[in-house]
Amino acid sequence: MKRKIIISATFILLLLLSARAQSSVNINTATEFKPITLEECIERAVEANYSVVISGNNLEITRNNVTLAPFLPTASLSSRQNSSTSDQRNFNSEGVRENSVVKSASLINSASLSWRLFDGFAMFATREKQKELLSQGEYNFRSVIENLVMRISAQYYQIISLQNQVSLLTELVAISQVRYTQALTRYNIGSDSGLEYKQAKIYLNSDSSRLMLQKENLRNAYIELYRMMNVSLESQYTINDTIIPAPQLEIVNLLESADINNTTLNSLRAGEKIAVLDTKLAKAARLPSVDFSAGYNYNFNRSQYFPSKFNESDGLNWGFSLSVPLFNGNEINRRVKNAKILEENARLSIEREMQNIESDLRQLYNLYTNNLRLIAFEEESRESAYLNLEAAMEKYRLGSLSGIEFRDYQLSYLDASNRKMNTLYQAKVSEITLLLMAGNLFR
Image (cartoon, rainbow, N blue to C red; front, side, top):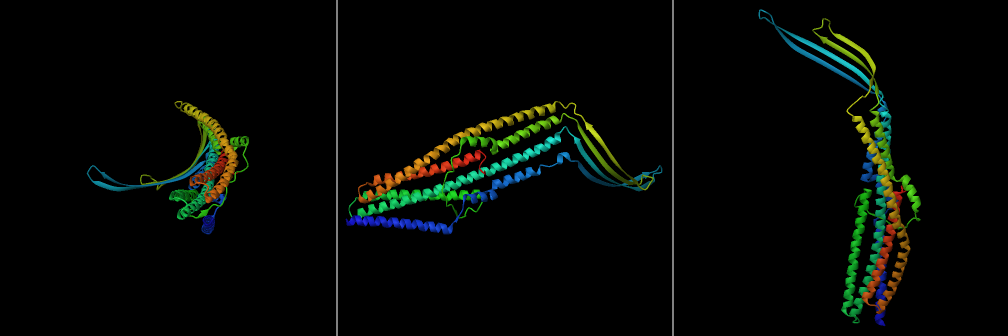
């Protein structure tokens, strides 16, 4: 009876110490680490992530390329000044040499203007192409942000999952420590052989090693999150959150939304419009072009050859020109044919992407709904495993349960808890991916 009292007291004391140590760790974490939410992670990443910044710069270049240049004239000014000096040597019939120096100078100033008035509507197609390229650039920029948000969210919830696993393993190590202490006490008082406490020590070391590896994975997960946020990799943030799936999504709504809002699909549609405009540009080369040009010239010349002191002239000139293409080796026909082929390829790319999106959506939705159904089952299994573990702990304390059987209950509780957390994580990641594919990630 005295032996049982000692074992029970030891068991209770270790649990209290474990709980106190855990609370101490939580207090230290709260004081040393700054909490951060998913929204804050996304905000920091969108502002500073290198991929987003580079994509934003590319979008700015595309935006700068949308101009009225195809409709506007071009004007230029030019000026040229020349000077020359030549030594002349003349010999008469008597062989007498006469030397002279001849100098001349000229100045030419001009201003010119050229304006294409008609080019087979190519200027209008060029302007529309600039707008579609901008639209495509905006979709590409949105795609970069969407994928970053999805990766940040997945990493955020993975850290929550890892933190739960660390807490679970910490609890498991505490239980293994209690078991080892009980087995050692029994061995010291001579009620058990040394085999039991040695086996308990092996299990304790195994659980401690697993806990250390999981803590390492957790630290690496935080570092990866810091990298995506583009903050110092030595930052000290902590995530205090849980994984809660949103209300179940409907496949019909997802498919309808994806057909309208999917970013990749809309980018391909913009690409199709660009291909159509390229065809128009190729056909525009068959039509005549009309140009207007004007200029002003000022010339000044001075030379010893002129009887006058210098020569000066200026004047304005202007006119229209018409160019009609007749034949250029079927080059225009070749460009039109190739443009039509690219236009067809763009249309087929859209149909292929629509098929891929529907297929991926349906497959992912099956995984998503299956995980939602599994959450309740895994929670029930975890609760049952926990109750079994509590009963096993009491039986082991009383000596009516072997160490191997107790270990089975421990691992059963660990597996059930891991399955539940993994199911929650997979359901949440599937939910985020479905919203991304449907184009509703920011809605």
